[in-house]
Length: 218
Image 1 (tube, rainbow, N blue to C red):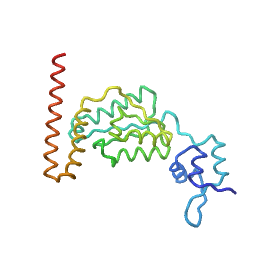
Image 2: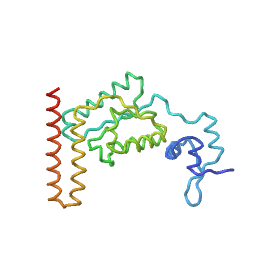
Image 3: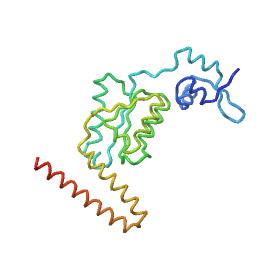
Image 4: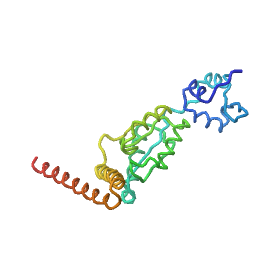
């Protein structure tokens, strides 16, 4: 009897290793445990699943993910309206929503509970599409990495809006300020960091005024 490691078995089945762990908990696949505790998968088990056509997740199974940066935005109803728009989009497309996740956090924050649940669900093979309004809802700077990981899990990201929300510019400014504050505080200390932050705010305000003035001329 040939035994495969979890990585080898996952590659043969075309799934993420975490999918095999989830199947084991559900009693859908039975690995052999070595004395060391490591899993090994008999080729007979792999062939059995392949012979069944694999354990496919329905193609219409989707998860929606929404995010706003601040509690103030959530209290104003922005988060709920975002979720409602995603629900409407899914319904119009004929998708079946299997879960909804959301966060109130900066797009720079990688330790988001909602995002973590999305990734774990994807790794378990529970859905085929992730619906977000636009890329920045998922992440500010690491979108490509998350997209690649989800694709490896068999999940496609689908953005539902071509135009960013009106408050997207404000969120970007807040994120840039957070980055500047963090680096300047490390370089110049807390007091110096505050001065750099204030100068950056004034610079942004000046740029915004110039943009508005140009629009007035047009």
